[in-house]
Length: 265
Image 1: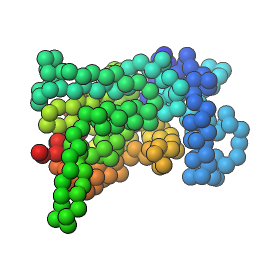
Image 2: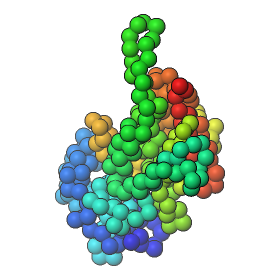
Image 3: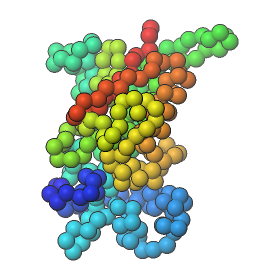
Image 4: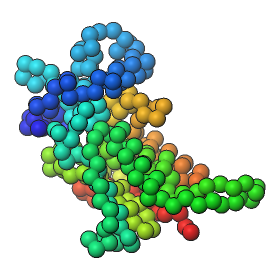
């Protein structure tokens, strides 16, 4: 349950019915190891509880320390118990329209941010077509409908930069259509950022403490590092490298959407 007292940012919200036992000891050890390596002057020495407080994994609530929302999203053993709405819904449609008649697959995914990204990528692998092409050099290559590298970056960005306030308690939505893939997160553009600014690599963090914590979280041999400017650059590079159309961005007051076009047949 979220505590009603509003912190400086929602990612620091104390989760009053959670404790240190609700966090994965293995992932906490990985985060501490990476933090010590990245910022030895801050995290090299000290008791574990003090270091977890410095990392904003724990925060005061009354006379005790409890996990923050960011901590559960990154290292929770079962974050859905305390945060039931903050996951991903994957919908697959037969055609190009979002209608009930066209929906033939729906998955409700729950877990930490790294675990959610892996689950989405697994679903995408199973949903995509892969075919062989022969390039001008005579070599044969396998190509897929979408770039998994681009999808990975997009999903991480959606989870890291979504609105986690009580008024936005709905999941990130991944929609697979016959001609495109859409990834939509609650929360429009944050602060002074515009779509043009995002295209140029500029960004503002709605959840700065969550983003920082993710930067210390190992994922596939590197840290998650969900900086939107860097993430979009990686997406563009992956799409160009794999010969896929450029992504499209849409934003409203309450939502942000990234659209990938399917590879042409």
